[in-house]
Image 1 (cartoon, rainbow, N blue to C red):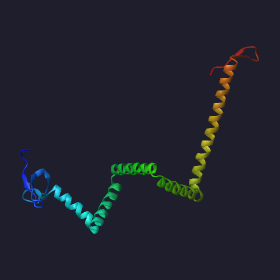
Image 2 (image 1 turned 135 degrees about the vertical axis):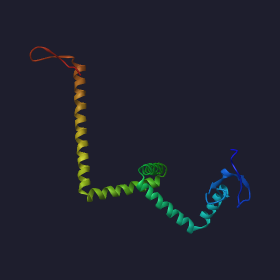
Image 3 (image 1 turned 180 degrees about the horizontal axis):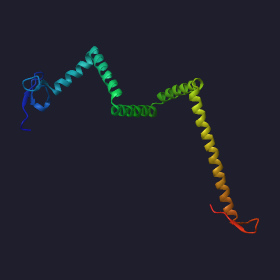
Image 4 (image 1 turned 90 degrees about the horizontal axis):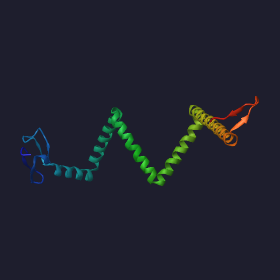
Length: 169
């Protein structure tokens, strides 16, 4: 840290360590004229007081973020994850928002069921598969129950040939 220079800020007039200034290769000293504290205070005040500047800055940032989200898959994944987490948190904490979202989703799904034959066919196929699976599961459970009942009530039953049958389950 002995190689740090002392630089005087032209805005506040205080002398500070060089690490308190942004680098600027166009200046003789190699550092900006204003310290980081003065620069951030100036930017904060300008954002607050100048609506045109704020609008330009917001538009520029929005464009950059859209392009980055479109071109950078890693950034897109992180941004999508943050968005999903924010929406999930809002749904859990805000009942009015949750009711609006549920109504909007119900309306969308209802219209899609009525207007999109491909969606309707997919939905019916899934429903039919679930019904088949639930019938198979119910039948399997009945078979297990019947087998358990037979095993518990009668361990061996005489067969037609006079031999005993054992139920192994």
